[in-house]
Picture 1 (cartoon, rainbow, N blue to C red):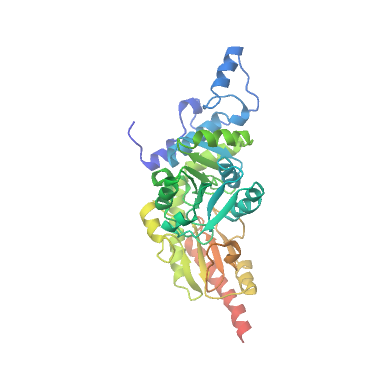
Picture 2: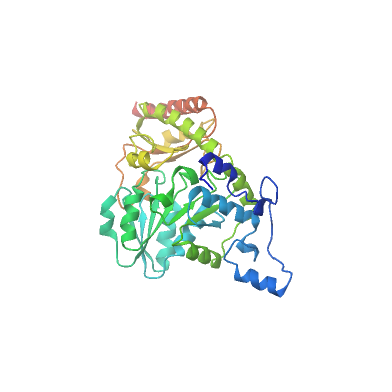
Length: 398
């Protein structure tokens, strides 16, 4: 069949009649035990347990199989493993490809729980982690050791938003037979095609834009033919499984992913450009803006952006930031992002989370997730926030 346009795939992916049973959406199939009609039937199922066939609830039901098919069609690869959250997808993907005595390369701008996993769990297992500058490029060669087994990318990086040169880093890693993993959550399954750029395993915190409504925890890891069998089986052996009800909601979220992301992108760019003109702002770290490190790679490799970006202030202190944040009307404070609502968080010292290359920022950082509200309301909310922020700083200077 001729390759479908992306917007068509978003609507049709995972809707094989095998899974939908003539319904528009695959029904929710809840199961632990699968029963068989005969000994022969049971043996046949056991022999096919690696395939998308009913064997045991932890392997999945038709609800899971439909969503896995959809993720592979949209993101690429040959198979998709499911996990109860994005962090579980990250940790289990890494655990599936390391052993005691191994060494991994982890991007310095990784999601904080990913760093914690490396510094605590992997360290206790005897796996060494080296953090590298996201913009390292060809310099990555100097960090590879004989026992390096995994290169982990996150692009854009968490909070600081550097966009990595994924094809170059993947090519260098593959020269040494290193498995390349990417946290692809920012792009979602549709704005960056990982397997076209050299990635072996792509992780999504489907909690974010895939689900899109801040009401489900879910993770995915799609893999190419090189890595799929090992990822699938090791994740199964580590007990990873997900609720069919959560998967159903994720599948429903997929259907509007394209239109939601376009609106998030439009709203966020409006706010980002407004912020870039504010006197309080040193620079905006949005991958689609030239002020963001790796902007050239974003233009080359990505199909679009979304609602998540950061900005660096010229100055600030805890009291001023608190005044800004506590009075917001349309921005809520909360962890995560990717839902329909706008969120705001402050980070006064990003260097607490960086070891390979410290950031010499003028002031503290704010991370914004721009939701689906009218951007003019969000701008007015930020404008009033800056008034409170400046009132505290001006008072302190008198």
